[in-house]
Image (cartoon, rainbow, N blue to C red):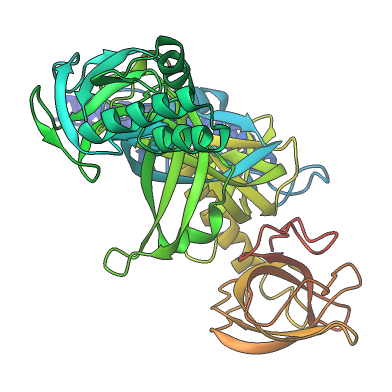
Length: 516
């Protein structure tokens, strides 16, 4: 019994010794792990203090976002998207920063905003027709019979001076006989009268001189082509009896053509005689014909509400065939020194057009702009951007959404600190002038909603800054304008752009849009 008790005691002491060692090792491991955790936490805090991570995104799918690191559905490591802290004085507080690898995967492309001439482009469908100034209708001046016809069918080509047909006219034969009799008599007055009669019946001076030299009348008279061209209509055959009111045939010179086009009523004021035009035909891809506006018809079509325009085109090789259709571009009024960006760079929104400006080093900012005319792939920027700015032309919608998100978060965070301060942003609007007083420096504008200020559409009177010239502003004009607050927070107009005319800005400054 004593041996058994001693054995039990030894086992209990062994178990207690093992437990003591385990507890000691546990305390040592916990202390070390706490130190490691403190190191990782410090690193994370240091990293977070340098740049705030908005979220994590898949490199190949920017729509796949997560709020922590991980892997994308394709098995790739997620990459962070940063927002600038705004502590650097050279970095705008409303910009965001994107890692270079993300830029590459998103295919971000930029292009410089530059100065170039812009035209109001009018796109229309043209209908090729004959140049009626080069069209000749052949009529006889006396009745008779076609004795000999030397052209066979419509479409036949003739050259100037070529014999077309011969015809017999009893009246013309009698007039020749009278001329020869007066020539024999020597009565100059009657001879001149006979010559005039022959001209009236269609004979030319060379034929009359040949008649006088020959001394014998001709039974048939020859008719020659007055110009080179093609036979567009032929209404006679040999032996037919013709009268003066009957068109024998017509000739057209196709070295030039007219093209009829119709422009919309809203574009009627954009087009004028002498403007340049281009035509493209489907069966000649890549071929461009250059012409000009020859005539603008004064009456609008009451059914289609379009204005007819006649265009003139040279037609070397006669490749433009009458009755063809063509895609026509008319270059209207010109803005010679317009600040332009690619159309693809513009993010359109109701009353709030924007672009994404590349600031360098992976930083981007969403910038509100005021747009003017559009011409082909280019859009005019009236205010909000400067020449030389780099704008994003690809992946700009994704960047804009992130810039808007980052800006919203910053505005929420700074709302309390900015209470009581007057607004400082320059904002844009559009409307119609209802009243103007250039002497006192104010105007009344009926404008649409201005979302940046939370204003609904209404009619307001604004004072203008000293830079604004109201001399060309008239009641009834549609305008784009920008307003900024003075020291008391009262908004004043600092830039006006006349929409209904070809005038440029009627103020000096008014450009940059400041974001909260």
